[in-house]
Image 1 (cartoon, one colour):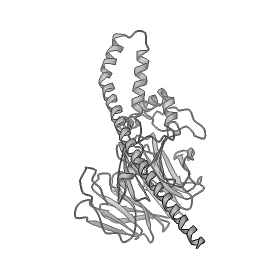
Image 2 (image 1 turned 90 degrees about the vertical axis):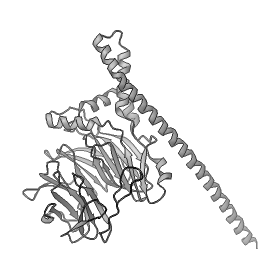
Image 3 (image 1 turned 120 degrees about the vertical axis):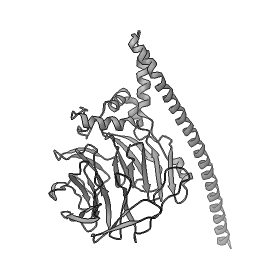
Length: 426
């Protein structure tokens, strides 16, 4: 299914696979959609009313994962036949296989520059491949469980993997050393996704939660509760403004991240203009990361240490859109969203400015220029308060319904008890 995000617009339903669909992905241009299935095939679709598709056949078992190269010209697929296969999109032909895993291959991804491929497998290894030489250049063995998912950091210098051992690990692909180890979930970690800016990592778990990790600080930022069962997949949008999660509760939820959208552009510009690294002190069991962290995020985090600690494991009321077969409205009340880090940062800066005994004309002019920004920030806060009010109202309705159901259950139990007592007396 392909949904149109505009209200009251119809969704596209594509029929073609003869068994469960395991992975779906848009091409970088957005003009094609690739899907992988248990029917051992990969299909390339043109997202339109006609639902035309081309079938790729070469795997001999379930195809678990499909991914496009950065230029959109190549596909890489991972399968239960223990192989990784590459295909050309333009000619729609099979190219070659990579064959060193000794168990099912769960996931395979291209690096941002398309030179490397990373794969995760049920043999508990993460393998790094040179695409041009068609050989494995390194294997990572640190996971104690099956490696469910793996992906490259937007900078291309690091990879992160999710495992059935309930952990997420981050490695530097140049030194081959593990940089970070997160054990924040109480269940299997099924999927992960880097924010395009590179400072955040989102994870999905069978413990029914989605978590957001701060890679610069090396800590958990948010825990999101919305799904009523294992969360099987997550992904950020191309700009990072939105993200989606899917679960075994038959729901697809679309969330608004409320991260500052300028972060993505600023980070991308810095990654192209400089190779300097921001030095961040390591925290417990977390090594220093060589990510290109932009100054605005670091300033926000330094100026508000109290807020960052409070955001950990937060369950703030939220703003999410869900698409499901049933019950989407009732479950939407469980969703949680983020505060915009830039809001508290700006208010902290304003407080510091007011505390100064005297201001130069230059500083005063700069304060006046920031007034429009403060006004928009206040509007954002008011909007968030409205959302919170609506969410509380929905929660109250849900609690009332739950109380009614409990009363009903108790009455039924009492009736059953009386009926059994009478039967015993008779």
